[in-house]
Amino acid sequence: MKQQTIPLYRTSTVHCHSNYCDGKATLRQMADAAVAAGIQTLGISGHSHTPDDPEFCMTAEGTEAYRAELSALKAEYAGRLDILLGLEWDLISTDDPARYDYIVGSAHYLFGPKTGAFGYADYSRAELRAFVDAEYGGDGLAAAEAYFANVAKVAQKKPTVLGHFDLIKKSNGDGSLFDEEHPRYIAAARAALRACAEAQVVLEINTGGAARGYRPDFYPSQWILREWQAMGGQVVITADAHSPEHLTFLFDEAAAWAKQAGFDRVQVLTKAGYVACEI
Ligand SMILES: [Zn+2]
Ligand SMILES: [Zn+2]
Image (tube, rainbow, N blue to C red; front, side, top):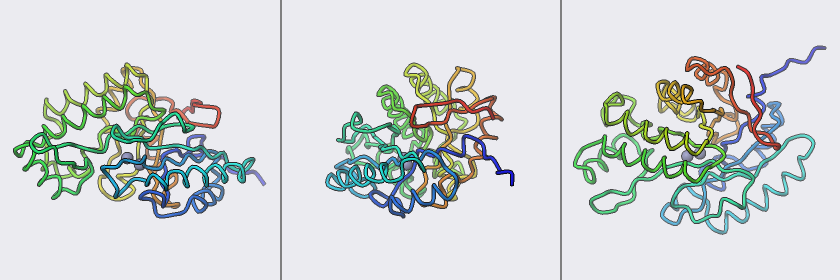
């Protein structure tokens, strides 16, 4: 019987979380689901230990257990599944990216300019509203500018994957926090995009926000992706999967999203590095 082939971009998923951080499943459950789905490359990218953020990140001890367990699974599944030991690294993380097979570099935090208070870019709408009111005098665009400045700093570290480029829009589905077509928003995003181009990083098209119902669209927005394509940028499709059923969720739609922006190929991360896949 002829085996059905799946597109190469659906054989690799490298932005995934386990219960060592805020994921729902064990590393082994993620690996077994990957095998069942015909995936060749599974990269787990646990949230890097960040003392300011005990809620979503791996603990210092948990990080070592994560590294040990994932390394053991990598050996156990060899020949069936290529497991990559990754890290979703953030600017204020204390872990060393050099210890990992690859890095998803992401900005997640805001530090309020008034009190220095710690905040999340992916707060709920009400939480972000309160943070913007308290720290930015109600100016949501100022929070977006601060966020994109952090994205530029992450890009300068040259991660393997630049994570959720415009995460700050997550809770802005109704446009009430800031206007995503405002010249200030566009200028801030463009400055971050230029930093990404200078660092020659690969931007992810991240389906996680859509999978979990926060936004109908992906990160990054279509106009950003179009500009990235015009700059000669490259993209990789990722799920930001927090559970096994989301390993390659909406990947075909993400490929269509890339195509719509003018891309004729996406990058696919393998154990030998990136390979191109026509779409
Ligand atoms: Zn993230
Ligand atoms: Zn993530």
